[in-house]
Length: 423
Image 1 (cartoon, helix red, strand yellow):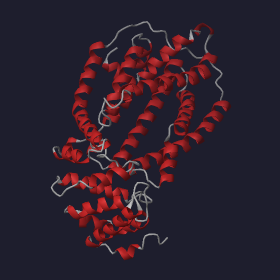
Image 2 (cartoon, helix red, strand yellow):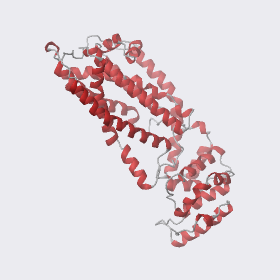
Image 3 (spheres, one colour):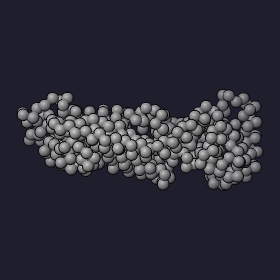
Image 4 (cartoon, one colour):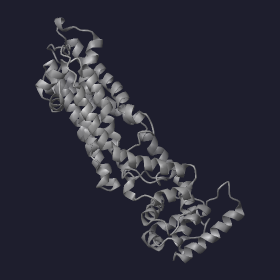
């Protein structure tokens, strides 16, 4: 087995499928490929030291996903139609199946395309969804091709056998994967998901609906057109050629690709830790020593305005933002402030609003921000009437008075906003 065989396998070539199925080393080769695939999946999304799940997550998920597919495809369909002479141990069949399942891992290398570097966040989200659809469909069709070749059955029937667990996996993932709960929690808190996450939630809902519709259709088709023939088990492995140096070469190539992006991720994490511990001026100084291109394009500079922590952290950070901070830094946080105003309501007290709008007075882009967001300023009415348990009535009244003065100096007609407490 070599890289050419692995590449031909991804294209569903019969000779490559048979070569992989008959090679005892395919199990460990596939396992290594799954681990290696963690790099193209995540190299420009997460810093490797943030969590060990970065590397081992795909392997853990694929172990359970592959085992689930094996239970459904082999125990549910193949075993009952085996020829008497084809009986073999289920453990050996699981190992053979997982070898083939894991060998499809390189299809996911498409995720390595750094779409965030040349598209905006929403467009990148759409592109990543397109890649997800391509990879998912490719792997389903490839697994159906594998079953069709090795069990010597028609491709359409093999596709039905594979689609059944695929639909169930999608349904389980959406229900128990947290997508629905996160959407509900965001809605209850008045926050909106980021544009790309909203797109993902919508897409997951559509996929969930398709899976719910497709599942009974596949079941009915399989019940109507029952299989009455016999099939072969997955082949017993006899060959034992392990492509060691070729896998090592792939590791070197992917590591070289990942290093620059991981340096960006490390800078992101370093800055995020300043923000998390409340060292806001230090966080701005750290950003000021870098350029925007030194940070990952796939992640928003902290604090992310689409997470709850932004209600507290962004005002505190803007309180120390100065006109001599680099322009790109000022624009990042003005865009974050703009994103806060896209939520259903503002979770900021008058004191927090005062911190942010005072920053608009200090920076040269402040009045431009006001002009661009005048239609969103009525949301201030509710926020200006917000009280926090840490602020006294006198403190809130003083902050409200100061905020009114700041808004007026910025050219905002505060009377048009309405009086606090008027609704």
